[in-house]
Structure formats: structure tokens, C-alpha cells
Length: 466
Ligand SMILES: Cc1ncc(COP(=O)(O)O)c(C=O)c1O
Image (cartoon, rainbow, N blue to C red; front, side, top):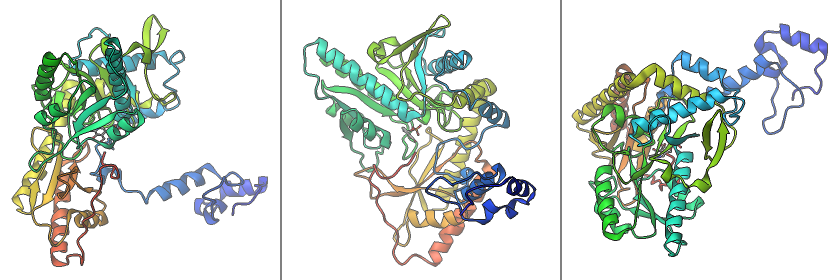
């Protein structure tokens, strides 16, 4: 245990002592209560950074869409702005202005109607906060329409594929909305348009389309959903909107697939969320909620701040947060521009296609993910009678690779897959090393299959693919 009091003599001694000769690194440190006395900063740093070595290496974490590499200049700017509380708009007006520019840049990328700095949106901690905000706005808009028509407002529902990320399950539970899931079927691991329309009624606050399924990276057919919703609205007068969950695809599609029409160009798409910390290429956590125009954001949810002559609107679930992530986002916008993002996204897609091609050629894998989607490769073993993707994931972990194995959504959850998320920093060279390691792991399991192949099934709520 650390001593109660550090005398001046002790302090002088420990300043001189070699780091691993100091008492703090030689004595046990209490883990679940505050230590009685101080320790030197260098010892505290060493203790914690050493303990964190037990974590996985973020660069080898192919499980996550979330950014693990930024340029040194971005890191410098982000470190310099860590101490600025984003919510202090009066004190940090330029930070607020930079957020406004980011919102406008993203709204412009998504073809929102309000130009000239008038875009409607906000930064968030991630897509999850953005989804809660957009979902809440959809629910309030629906309630207002129903109340104005003198119709009941007590049974809101939302229609989405069962492949949604867990945040949507949280949204329906936190905000008391009935989820109506479109089941997946073998051969279709995204929402079915006809199946979705069959679930819509006058109490539907929105239909959700995912631009970049978390499971396979596939883009849902948003334009087809839009046409079907438009036709339904014309027939019934319901005014059902579409929300696009573009957590991952929001920063891929505008650059890699500029001709794909999925955003506010479609009349029924009224709000979009995206994660700046995924293909926006910023360290966690930053996300964005963008509305087509001000009519999509119910006034009663907004807090107005009249600062520097601009009407600053705040709508968030959170109050204080660091400014760093928004600044990091703006750095990327200035630094990369459209060309830079396009070059990066094309490069990531090339690496993903390379992995998919080689996996396919090996004859062992079924490639479940599609081209024309996110730079993600989802692979199922053609024959998993002797070992499964979960077994393979464990063997790869021994080399440091973190590759999640999971089951597909309900109804097609007899399929076990591995998902490789290609992010900035995952070069073609590293991809080849990874593939060599996959071949070696397969050979090892071929030679020594486990006594009982691991066939755990995850329910959607309990696994946290992100
Ligand atoms: C489709 C989708 N929606 C929402 C989320 C949640 O995003 P965030 O981690 O930014 O909160 C994810 C995370 O991967 C996702 O893939």
C-alpha cells in the first residue's frame, strides 16, 4: 500500500530515483478506492500506459468502423482543443462557427435544400445520439400531424430491417415507439421494400433505410423505398417520411458512388445521421444529425441562442463535451477536400475487393458482402462442420488481429460470419499479411480441429458490432 504521507525527503528521493525504483511502481496500488497519497506524474503515466498494453492494438482491430489513425497535425489540433467545452458558445464562438460550417458542408454533400450557411443539423457524440435526436423529431412531427387531424397519438411505430444496429432497439425502448421489423430471408440481408410497405400504417413515424448495413456493408435500396413510400403517401395521405441511417455510408457514398441517389435528392428522405468518427475519418466520438430543412425539426425541441447575429440552434441529449472532435472533422474537410476523401474511399474499396477476391479464390469462403457498398468484407465458411468462424477468430487473435465473428440477423442467424472492416491505415500490404495469417489459421484448424466447434449464437441485442 502507498504510504499515507510523502515527506519532503521522500519526494526528493523519488524525483531522483530511476522510474522503476520509485515506491509507486514497487508497491501495490489500490484499484477500487482512491489512493491515500499522490504519486509522481511519470509513475502514474507509466502504470496506466503499461496496463493498457493488455488492450488490443487499435490498428489491428478489424472489428470496428471507427477511426484509429489521424494525421499528426490533426492530433495536435485535437489535443490543443481538448480543454474547450463545446457547449460554451459565448466563450468559444469560433468553435461554434466551425461546427456550423461542418453541418453545412455535410448537408451540401447530402444535397439538403437549405444552402448559404442555412443548413439544419448538429454535431453529436456519434450516430447513436444523432439517431435518438432524429427519431425524437420524427415522433414529435408525427404526433403533431395526428393531433392536428384529431386522431389518436398513443401508438407510434417505426419500420426497419431486423439488421438495424442496436441503437435502434435503444431508441424504440427509450422513446416508447413500437418497432416493426422486416425479417431477413436467405439471399436478402437488407430490408425488403414490399415487406416494409406491408408494415407501414397511419401510426408509422418513419421508415428507416440503412446506408451501410453493419452486418455486411450493403446499402439498402433507399431510392426504391422512397418511390414506394411516395406512392403510399399519395394513395393514403399519410406523409410517412424516411430516415437514412448513414452511420458508415454517409462519408463513403458521396465520394465513391456520387451517382447513387440515396439522400435528400429523394423527396421522402427527411433526416440523415452519419458518424464523423467512421468514414468521416475522425477519432471517436463525433456524429452528425442533418435534416432536409427547418420544417423537419419541430420547434419545441429546439433551444435558440442568439449569438453573433446568428440564430444558433441547439438540440442535443448531451451538454458538455470537448470541442476536439468537431475541430478534427473540420481539419479533415479542409485538408482532404472532395478529392482527398474520394482517393481514400477508392483506396479502401480496392483493399476490400482485394481481400474478397483472394478469399473467393481460396474456395473456402463465401463472400456475403457486396461490391458497390462499404469497404467491408463479410465472409462465411463454405464448410463449417469441423470449425467455425468463431474458432478462426480466436486463432487470429493470437497474432493480434481482432476480427469479429457473429451470426447474421434473426431468421438468417444460422449463418456465422467474419467481418473485416477496411479503414484508413489498413494498407494493401497489411491486408496481405492478414490474408497470410488467415490461411495459416485455416491450415492449423484443418490439422487440429477443435473437439467441439464454437457455434454460439448472439442475439442482436447482446452483440455490439459497431
Ligand atoms: C448502421 C449503424 N447505425 C448506427 C451505429 C451507431 O453509431 P455510433 O457508434 O456512431 O454511435 C452504427 C455503428 O456501427 C451503425 O453501423
